[in-house]
Length: 111
Length: 117
Image (cartoon, rainbow over all chains, first blue to last red; front, side):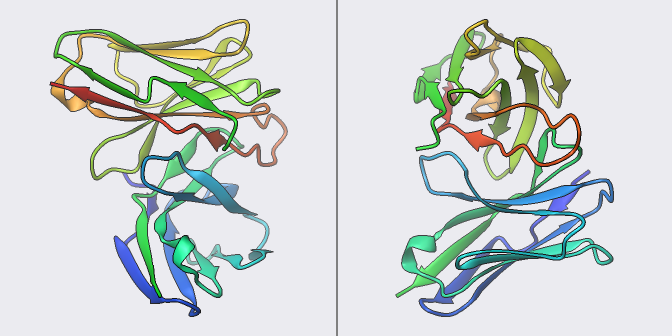
């Protein structure tokens, strides 16, 4: 049972434009949601998180939006840069314990 | 660099063998998590230790075991290896499990790539 889903395996965006990565979840008990970025041959790197009581969190070029009624979150990257090209994982946690990950979305930013 | 170290980086072994993967958490972190990433799959939680004690178990096979030592490093032992055990194994650490709510961010090591032939 996939509790966290990233339905887009890949996304291609032009440099300078907005990248929008989407994630859906089914478990309404999740209390935090996180985004990790992963380069080849490296471990996932924490990007940004959002509490289930918020609907937006911003950190520099990265903004995460949460729509609890739709059980949907998205990561916006503005402006996108070639160095942002990586695999992005959406993850969720219940009471701060284990992370439940989506399958990932490959982002390619073209220069 | 997350501060989490994992050794070895690569491991190639044969079916039926046993291997040990090692993880050193970030300085000050008491909690260690192990995750498995198989081909075409997201990361799957295996097991969590906090200050030497097992705290949570995920989809970990009985052939797999782990422990956390007094110096807080952790080892994941995989035995009777099968072809399907070939995967990336990641260790993550955090300060402490979030006992009273709140986010305790997990920081990941670079992983160990296990290939079973």
